[in-house]
Image 1 (cartoon, rainbow, N blue to C red):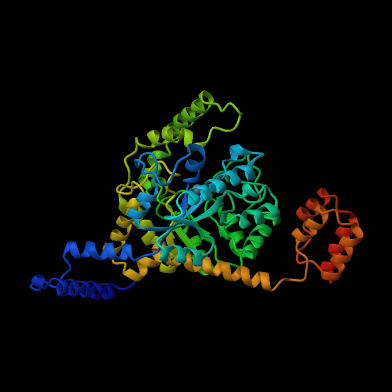
Image 2 (image 1 turned 90 degrees about the horizontal axis):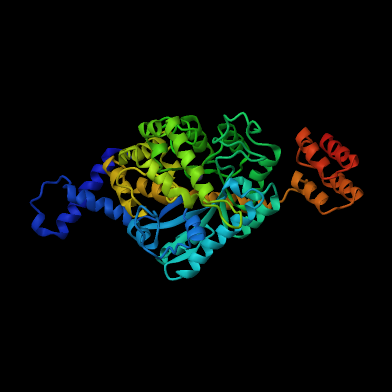
Length: 487
Ligand SMILES: [Zn+2]
């Protein structure tokens, strides 16, 4: 946040400008009237390129055949083209969220959701366009089109296969949360890290770290929303590019494991990344979190959901999706009063103070949450956030950073890192390259030859040894790796 002094002079300027354009108002006192303050906030909002990094609308596209061009009541959906225009939203990252219930078909489910986003863009070519880079977002904005992007939610979507990760990048996916609420085979989640029945990795496995490296090389943003604290710190150690939290808030203010501690906020600042604040009532208001996490009430909700799933099975055996039982969860959530808008603004303010004004943004989680703060009924209400920030003393430049500028900077840095990593190819072999040779059934002598010629950039940890063994690597290959490392 800039000083109040500069805010004062800005207000004075706008008052003077208003006085000049309305000569009859010349006698007005040189203090900002409530009306001119609201007008200034409005102009700050309308002149911004606004980027939201998380909305779960694709499930509505796919499972409900929802048309984004259709205006919908706010109790049915937070996003449509009319509301996007009202809120002046410039770009949205639609979440390709893979429910763990789709086990065995994660990638297939992801492909279907990706297709549903492209289909919406194809339906409204005059109003929206697919975007794949920071430049694309800016160009779409210049053409007054809504920029449509995609991020995968849940690293299990790649089915432990680096080739699928690359395929998702080629399809246009530009970020991936390393986990969702479920720990996967290579990274721990904050959602079940306390559950003794889940096999954990103390953060990330070697493969998980290789996923981060490959994301850096591709130019896919590493997203640490949902991960456990240990996974977070591992990701920051490994990543050569800035990371994002696409939809996370502050744990200092609201003690939810999905939120980020002040130490994590400072780590993101040092990494050059950005924390996009989640609007979910349970993540931004401590009182709401407490009352809504009452174990008895949660038990009752979960029982209702289970009963609904049993009563509404799909004939083809596919899982009952979140959207089908979402009305039940919304009804359950409505028993708790919505927190004030100020709770959300407090989180933006806190993160701006602890991580810095260059490291905070908006990650609404629209269409994925059952309760939002008062006044925020849908994307159409985004101007209220700008107005509240302005009233707290944030100036135009700071607000524009929060609304999209910070994220755009991070996206550009991720793209630049990828270009650097791709143009300076290392001649030493990575673990995934050795795996690829095995998968392609290269002969043992050929693999050994390449390892001794180029060297390897990894140590043969017990985990890697087991992985290679499982892929039928002969002892000669393992010996060659150890020997190459000794050199
Ligand atoms: Zn999420």
